[in-house]
Length: 342
Ligand SMILES: N[C@@H](CCC(=O)N[C@@H](CS)C(=O)NCC(=O)O)C(=O)O
View 1 (tube, rainbow, N blue to C red):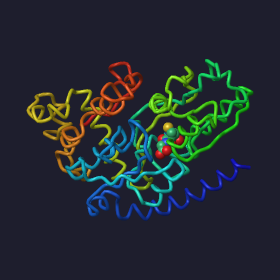
View 2: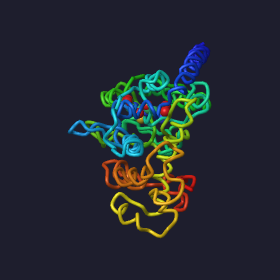
View 3: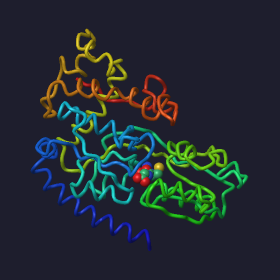
View 4: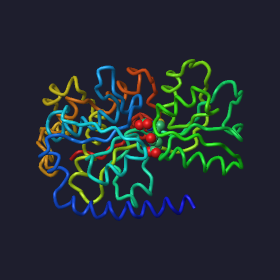
C-alpha cells in the first residue's frame, strides 16, 4: 500500500514537474540565474564533507564547492551562491518548484529520480555506498547478524529503501527508527534509541567522531548498495543542464591535465592544447554554453580542480580523511572520467 501511494505521489509530482519544466524552458534557468545575480543551490541541513556550515557560518564541502564552481562559470565569482538547506524529503520538490536552480545534496542517481520526478542528473561527483555503524555492545561484526535490530535511519532516502530490500532479501527483520535530519539520526543512535545507524558510508566515520564516546561504536565492513551521488537540475532546460554538466567536467578534466587553483595563471601560457581548451585560451570557449570564454579558468582558479576539492573537503586535508579509492581519476584506477573539452 505504501508503495502504491509513493508511486501515485511521484506521478503527480512528475506531471507538475513536467508542466513547470515546460514553462521554465521558455525562460531558461541560465537567464533567470543571471538576472537574479546569484545561484540558488539546494544543500543538506548539515553533513560533514558535503555541505556543512563552518564555525563562521560559511557553507563548505564537496557539493558546496560544486555550486561555487557553477557560480564561477556563470558570474566569474564563486561567492554568488545562496545556499538553501533542505532535508532529504524536501529536496526534489524544491527543485521541481523552481525554489532552487540546482540541487547539490549528496543525492543518489536512480532511474525513478532521473525520469518520473522530471529531473536530470548532471554526473557523479562522489561514488558512495551504504554502510552500517553499530554500538560495540551489540557484539556483532557483520550486517548478517543484525536480524531483529532497531535501525536509526533518515526518511526520504535511498538508504531507507535499500535497508528494507536488504533485510527482506536475507530473511531478516528490523525495526526502523526514522528521523528527518542527519543530526537527529546521529543523536538518536548516540542516545541508544537504536542498535544500528545506516547511511551513505562517507558519513559514518564523521558521525562516529561526533558521538559522545566514538570508541563505543564500530563501522561494519559491508557495503550494501551503489550510491552514485551527483548534482541535479530540472528536465526541459538543456542549456542549463549543459552549464551544470560542463562545470563538473571542467573540474575533472583540470585534474587530469594538472591545472590547479595555484597554477591556473601560469597554465594560461601552456602549450598543451587540452590545457588551453580547459582555460578557454583556444577551443570551443564559452559561446555555445552562453558563458564567458574564461568560464573554465574561473572555475579552476577560484574553486580548484576535482582532486583539490576532494582532498580539502573529504580527503587528507579534512577531518574525514577519506581515501580517493573509486573516486580517483580513471587513469589512476578510479571511476572519475569526464568527456573531453574540445
Ligand atoms: N544518497 C542518499 C541519502 C541522502 C541523505 O539525505 N543522506 C542523509 C544522511 S547521510 C543526509 O545527507 N542528511 C543530511 C541532512 O539531514 O540534511 C539519497 O540520495 O537518498
